[in-house]
Length: 495
Image (tube, rainbow, N blue to C red; front, side):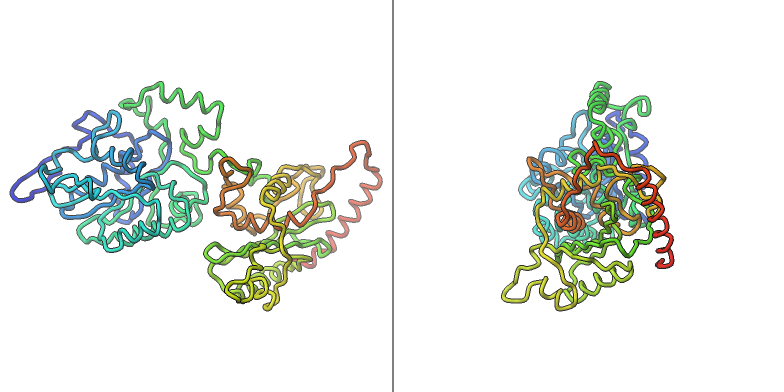
């Protein structure tokens, strides 16, 4: 690649090639994806030490050189991470890798080249790469409000998992408007939870994947022999990770295989869609229905419905959620959910914060009541609530072959969810993370879990049965005949 500026010509070959370093197959796949006309957001995700950040930085430098006079943004969440990792990749190289910006591209002399005070690198062709941290999303949005960008590189994008980070991401996209540049966002990612916005937005398994995204996943084995004989990694490094992986399978899945959703610190480790999701069925009218409501504005308000059968088995049967919605419409949406399922709750339990009056105005609970939705103040025990959910997911009980379509004599979890009825709860359960040093979970993406917690906090645990007493087989047989007849009678109320 070359660029002519003020009669001075600088010619630079591929800086990896001149250093005797070859690219692996996944790095080449990433580079090809970056050149697709319809690809606007390219995520390079996967195992640690697989060359993701190196490939992204190298690609951005190539764009800066091929499109003279353009501005390119490189971002990391915190300044120490930016200084000690991302900038090193560009300016000095990392390990055996040469710097992503070949020194020949940077002019020497005062006022030119690398300007540490401005966190910028100026190239001979008039392009510049600016380095920014984004620890405070609102401030980061203001910092680039009047900047026209040709590309954005976000290093370790999985770290951006707070409130307003998705809005910051959209802000970066909105600044890609230079007619001279590629106008693309690229990102390096280690795997995170499957409710992270970048997974939802770009992963091939996401039902909400956007068409302008590309997702390249790399494993540790893509960057070591025999798959990549030219690897600069010490073979002992891979063996060390494999030894750790034998002791910690979650670590191996995440950091060696690059699997999203595999992370330590999960709160509900026994969650298994194969066991906990069941086909929807008709709820007999005699069963109790309990509602739980978590309230919010920026965070969504969530209403969940749980059915309880005579044998104290729980079934998640439906949910409603809405963000930035006034009380009148919230009450309407919740009632419509209940009516659509033919489920009249015997009780609803609502977030205690809903009773807080703001500036002399009626509380949200009072406003919902005015619109026909009554509820009691929920028990807000977080630690006990999470333990209760965990217990109900773990405890095995005899299934119900006459209503829930279980096999005769099958043992099933005490709490299960009707498949397709509660997508938000199903998204949150496997991604709830334990907050370091506590028994609580991280306060993020937990709105449906909070609503479910209010339901279970309202019910005492089922007492353990006396193991010395055995069921009368004749009584059990008679009960099953009665329940079978009852279930068949309920079929006519199908909805």
